[in-house]
Length: 269
Length: 366
Ligand SMILES: Nc1ncnc2c1ncn2[C@@H]1O[C@H](COP(=O)(O)OP(=O)(O)OP(=O)(O)O)[C@@H](O)[C@H]1O
Ligand SMILES: [Mg+2]
Image 1 (cartoon, each protein chain N blue to C red):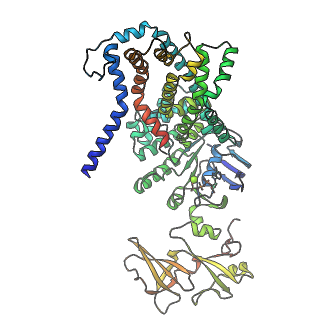
Image 2 (cartoon, chains in turn cyan, red; image 1 turned 90 degrees about the vertical axis):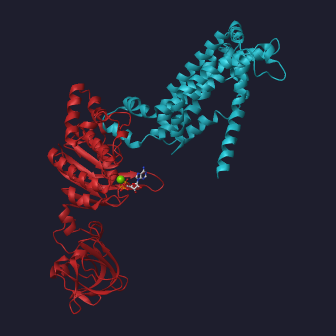
């Protein structure tokens, strides 16, 4: 019994370290000089330096960061704006075709994006949206919308029907009902959905690398720049990767409580 | 203040086999009356109530509140307030906000809302809790907030769907009395759904009994108990239920286990050609008698002791189960054979076995 618990704890630690190790390695490497980063065996003790971070900004990191921020913010807002009414309708006042509509939303996620990239490229070109942040905003919104609707629908389904009826009897019209009664109750779920949209948009690479370049490039595109040009710069790449993941980590940390509550709220029925 | 009228109102749930949850209900509830809707689970009580609220479509007929036909009006335009079984409080609002929400939506000024909420809170003993969120309240307090939310609106009709079913037994008794007193004080027309016998008998001016969406009888509690219109009402109202037995009928009366009870001449006349009738007798109308006296034999199978009284369940032969109320101090033993007689002849109810309707009382409506 006791032995079992100890070995379980040890196993948990092992798995946790296995998962966190690459991240720790990335953090360590980002504070090394390129020379330290290349030693074999790897150095655990070294004089930390910030020169890699300076190097990242010298390479023009900021415009990419701005693009990522803008695209993520606008597409997430657009997703919320569309998904909230959609999931409300699909959960609280369902009609005959509701399940078909839900299936249709999901089906849009079934096509591998590689299969759609050439038409998307041509369309973007014709609309003069190549290397334009708005192309990414539209695509990310479309990409996250089905998932967001499915997620939020599960949260809306948790809202007690009688509470909505009570509000209707109390005299609430649809907008009041939605914004003053239903939304406050599902707020944690909405926060969770928004966070997932932020993460997906922030880390999206395939559309970004194919449809944008220097002007509209996002952080993942910037990171890939390290690999293709003059060889590999491990330390600087690590510094850039750390900078790229920081915003998501911070938002995730702030939203942690909401996220856990939100996710379990939908899951536990 | 207003009367409520169901005029042939039906609610039909469409589907592969359409369900008539409420079937051509004709019922009017007078201004200021407290009407209790009872019936077994699934009999359409909630549906009937929700039709008045506007939360359920009316597929046939009409609903009127006061002199307005409200059949097609949304809930907010009906001037009703509803108390839900789950209370359905707004979890993100304080008690005061919960109670004042409807008034605020009407555009009433903040001070006036506050005044009304304070007044209702004082009435319900909620003043201390006005700033709390519902999750920080006990079940009984939540129930009172739900009541308060209905009261502050000063509606013309209160609708309550099993508002006490989530309370423990003691609190339920207390709250039952409070609601009845409050309703009398405000004299607001009230429709109250319950499946609790005691609530039905003690709270309502009148009780309407539903079964499968059909109104069985609507009368005062006393009338319902003393003169049930059919075997369903007879068996449903009263606990333990009335004993019902199909017995052969002759000129002399009805016979059970060699015991013949004479019937009134006009009851016999109304029974006409029937060779059998359903006879009902309440457990308290029976008594244990001495060996030589008129009565039938009963083999005791179960004794429920309730303190003052005891209920003796037994078999009267031919599989006929009978319940008798006896003195709690000297109940018979299990397996014992006792003799059971009637307290008074007039306490027999006689029903037509085909239509199940009462034939014992000529004064019965329907
Ligand atoms: N949405 C629905 N679709 C189809 N049938 C329904 C629907 N809602 C209720 N019913 C049916 O209508 C009938 C009446 O339901 P209702 O909820 O009014 O019963 P009730 O008397 O309130 O029962 P309870 O005491 O269990 O609350 C039931 O047979 C039920 O199955
Ligand atoms: Mg019900």
